Image (cartoon, rainbow, N blue to C red; front, side, top):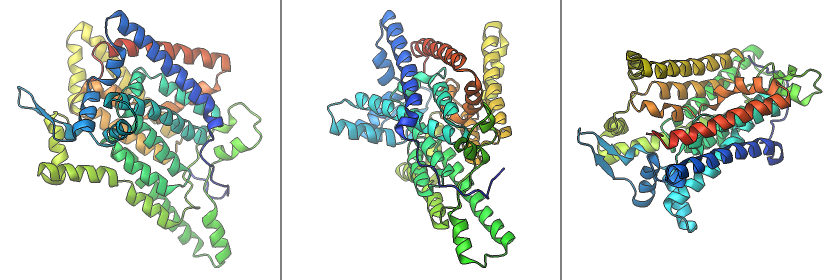
Length: 433
């Protein structure tokens, strides 16, 4: 699964000009979603902007930004909903923007999400372009924009911010920028609990790189030629797919046969170690602070989540939730849809494994899927919790990229329209819990 012998300069982050088609397409899809939402909401006598900025978790984030931590709601059944459950990076940015510009906290949250969604789209493009090429990169961004719950990307929620940090951290890992990868992973860990997925990706890639170094040293028996050893350290590891994109292409999809792996040989061991040490700092710092704040020690954050009846039970509660749907005919259709959706996600993940996606992407996606599907509460939240798992879209993006341009545009437009309609219906109905 690796290609260790081919030297090549580590690619820079894709220039804005290269990413422009993906970003323009992303903006068009999301603009369509907002226009449909505005029309649907107006027809129901509701404010689309309020739905985007002042309901559900958006209110919790703005309260943290305005008043800090310490707010909680005690429910009649004894549950305690504490705002300590919400990680601090988005509220910090809301407070900063509110201080710098004449914006309310809600306006600031909306602005942060819009900017972060564009950064996330660019990061998704960067990862996919590096792995499978420009055309697949554009398709991946459009598919992510047109997810059924893609409207969340435009809400004052933390999903867009987290996805942006995760995508760029993964890109940094793939291109051997370990310190940047660690810093972005730390910021992702200050954004959502699922920041653990980014930490896992960075750590797995780092451990594998050190194991490879040791295996290479044992195989070579120690380099007698210092110049040769230094040259080997400078040669990054790339795959035949990355080389093929820079070579003349003679067949339509021949350049998408393999995925590149980690470019570690150009990174000194101390940089890799530093990146690994930085990665968990954000999550660890906030969890330990919550434990100190609550007086419950390192596991205090789990107690906070328990107050929301949220935890990790391996998927047992979700399985019971799905099974209960089959007790009557109308709800059985919903149950079948849930099974189909989960099956599709797992199938796409298996395809990613079979297509030999880079290990950091597989680890990251696997942890996101596990944390989302195996949480014990808020089953209606699972679609938006799965939204950061963008690598599951890569097999679909590759397939879409192989179509002729006309067909690809037609398919994308149809999916975007369906997403816009569903997003307006969903947000005016049950919406995110």
